[in-house]
Amino acid sequence: MTESVPQQALNEALDRLWKQFLPQIEDRVAAIESASQALASGELTDVQRDAAHAAAHKLAGVLGTFGLTRGTILAREAEFLCSGDADPAAASQLSEIARQLRALVAQHQ
Amino acid sequence: MSHRILIIDDEDDIREVAALSLETVAGWDVAMASSGAQGLARAAEYHPDAILLDVMMPGMDGPSTFRELRKNPATSKIPVLLLTAKVQSNDQRRFADLGVEAVLFKPFDPLTLSTQISGILGWS
Image 1 (cartoon, rainbow over the protein chains, first blue to last red):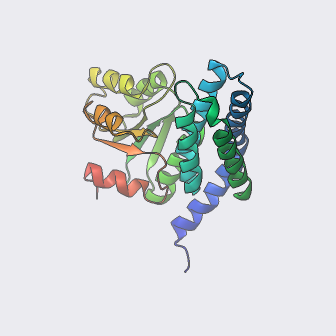
Image 2 (spheres, rainbow over the protein chains, first blue to last red):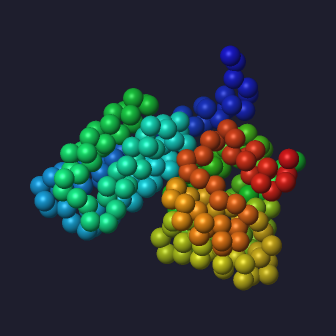
């Protein structure tokens, strides 16, 4: 099916914005990766946890807007895992979420 | 019909996508602010038909910004729609109780955001 003119223009502009904001989206994924590594080694600080929580919250909001619905779901799981006192037993789960987020973002390019 | 929308959000990617959506799909005029304080000033000078206001912002958050908008006679009547990535029902109730026109959720669909806003504000 042929896209309408506004939809085509929107999609093209969204592609440009995706490229523009990709570095900060990758930085947010990196914040979750760092937190998962620190959690696994028992060295997660409050600052790291809060940074990962904020990064996950922002990813949850933005990824679906760019069409990555699965990314929003994963980011919400990471946000939950990083809220309050993060459980060291959740390190592998958080690491897997970060890995999947990294892959989703890379595939979308 | 063209409308004037002010987007207040500290996240530049969300701000830009929302602006792009409303400009490209609906042809509305959009102004942006990256903080609550900046948004208050912009609202008073731009006189938007509606404000799209993020909830979680550093410094003055969305609810605080909303209360300040209501205190100023120049902005007190402007419809405000909160924009949030929080999905828990107690958060949703708390936001709705503020007196905003509606609570919209991130992620939003850029193709239908303007239709959603129009429907809520009776602009259809």
